[in-house]
Amino acid sequence: MAGFSDYLENEILDHIMISAASWTITSPCYIRLYSTSPNWDTGSGGTEITVANGYDRKSLTMSSANWSAAADDTNGVACYISANQDWTATGDWSGTVVGCGIWDAATGGNLYYGNDLAVSKTVTSGDTFRIPATTGFVVSVDKAAAAGFSHYIKHEILDHVTKSDASWSAPAHTHWRLYTAAPDLLLGTGGTEVTGGSYSRIEVTANSTNWNTAASGSLTLKADQTFTTSTASWGTVLATAAFDDTETNLIWADSYTGVPVGIGDVFKHVATTGVVLTWD
Image 1 (cartoon, one colour):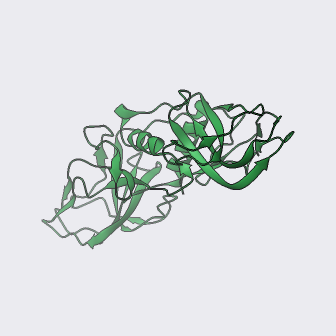
Image 2 (spheres, rainbow, N blue to C red):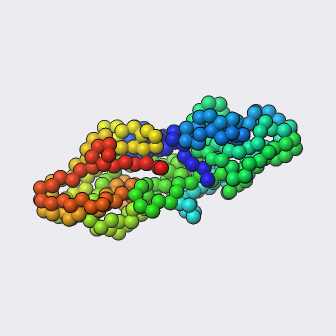
Image 3 (tube, helix red, strand yellow):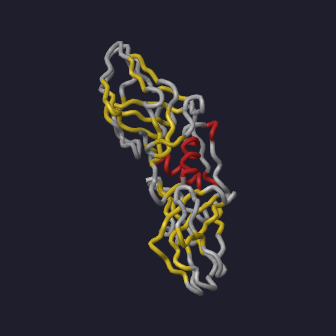
């Protein structure tokens, strides 16, 4: 399974919540093989196989022709390279292949995703090194049991980060709800939303006024987001959830240990700490 790099996590978080920071996949990307793996979060370090003897960085068009559609699997949501990626050695390679990463440029550039091989491979003259279709390079987002990005978003984002022809446009706003009985935090279904006492959902515009730029794989509110002052008891708030502009697709949800809201109270999502969106 290949994980998102910090660079990709930050780009996607900004894409979801800051409309001016929309991001699309570069195509083609380039597959690199390593005898010493780099840091798969930062892309730094590592030792790439020397470009010689039949090894070079392999160009990969990022499209539905080369990647499967995002789909559920036992680990969460995943997509995979749909055709074998082969190198034929014309001489012994410079080291044992232990890792593989996909970058946005043939040289330099940004790591998108990568991981160590399940089984290392020494490649000698005449060998074919293969990343097999369907199982050799799988990009996945883990299945969450509670808080975090929704099932809907995980499908959309996996397609967005592997296929230039399956891009996803983030909503112009998110619409936030409060619950006294938590909904399904992955699907947004069920639960008991607050009613009465002047409660209303709040709309948060997707811009840099409301959201900080993502860093280290996390994104936070820049400004407090305040619900109306309660004119009657709302009960105990146990969860919050953000939906897109259709108010049908869940974006993100989280649960609380319990926040009682009485008459005259003001419930808010506090800047920097009240809502923390992260892929980790």
